[in-house]
Length: 176
Image 1: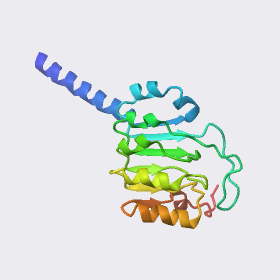
Image 2: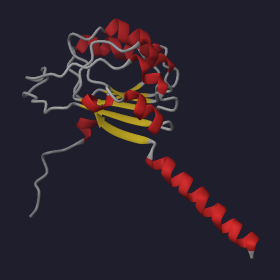
Image 3: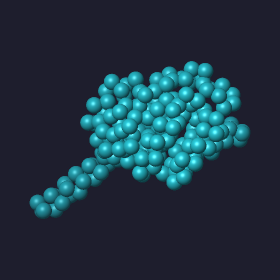
Image 4: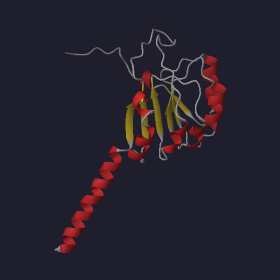
């Protein structure tokens, strides 16, 4: 009977560990909380695979392919590679001018970072070329000229480029 109880206990312990790890593999957080508490997040989410960093305010996007009225420029921490298992990184309405050198040490597979006319695309592309695992870049909220987007795509031929906002349709009527 003790053996049976031990097996059941081990089963539930294993189940609990698996479930708690899957919960701690994804995180969405506002940058104004993330940056000052970075070390705490690294400790608490050591198994983190997906990270969404959020704009602390509300971005107002005018019609057309132009910069928001109130862009939020964000400098991604050089310590981002402290998340050893990070595969998916999304910056939500946060415009970057460059990426940290440490991005090349991450195991990123997917990336969604809004680039803007002031982004240093040559530097960014040089770093992204060194991201060995990178498979997909989401161009959502990117405000770049066609020639800069073409440069990005040509420079990273092994990467699939998507715009997940293109998949959303707001034309369908909502039935009540």
